[in-house]
Image (cartoon, rainbow, N blue to C red; front, side):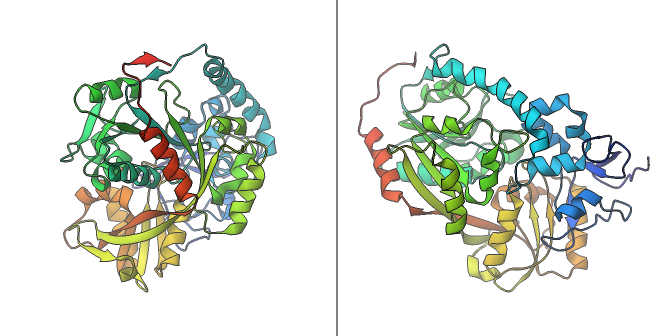
Length: 453
């Protein structure tokens, strides 16, 4: 097996019998990026020896495919070597908007058997969540991948702060380098930890909400107690915690991506559901994100009709470019500054397609794109390779996400024209209902003490 020493990924032969009988030339990229030549079309990596995977070409993929991500999302897939080694399987698992793969229904059934007992234990009261002496709101989702949780966490935090509350944001801090039980990212006055130590999303939230206390830790109940011992906190906002039922929450806000309606059709790995749709009955509010298209929203609502109840607050949110910020200097321009500019896109988020669409809708001429797995840890070799690609393509700017900017900044040179697209969440429908929901709990006294619910 030939291996390119310069490539930031390993290459394996496919051993799956799911698609090719174990004797094909499909290639799989592990822990690296795929450089595309044009958005929405199959491209070739300059490091792949001139060969593009036949499955990738079939699906029109010009973004990275990551076994590490698939296995971390889908523990049940560890039973199947195909989930680790076949590019076709990874494409099926990770692409938002793909239909359910019926040939993975058996694995999805096993996944359901694995997750249901834990959910039943909480539903029946056999397991008791910890209840903190402050109000708690969770922002989460039913599916894997990016649904816009971070912009929604920022929006709710800003709303609560506008009401005069002292707010803390708790996150797991996925892929952070620190092994400490808890890391204080911000004390509400200054940012104390970087994106590597804290995780890229908590670091972004700390910068966007400078008066909020931000902390990370796997045991969010313990982190919450730790913060409450030090600050008079009224509200805690939990990032990505709908399935984290060990901590009681007063409100559950669940986000569903309008661009990924078909992801609701099946459990992992056949579909993209983390748990059955019936779990939505635990929610207090359902927010359909990226609700730009009425057709997409209608497709989501049709799938949720059986589980939506009259008491459930329903809302729709769209994400709009707000500013363009220099990664190196912090200089800001209005979003229309990049209209007409030739750009190379760089992202390491859960849904790179949405980022590309936003850039193009904002008038950016996208000449190429490099997309990595969500929470990807950039290296200097990655930046050198992307800089060379951008130079060869004769682009004016490299455009990245605000989430990636903090990780890229230490690797750039002073004269690099790399910019981050800052987004804002605009509530298109249901804003008053969401406000009332928060105000209702804000005005209700909270029981004292740390107890089991």
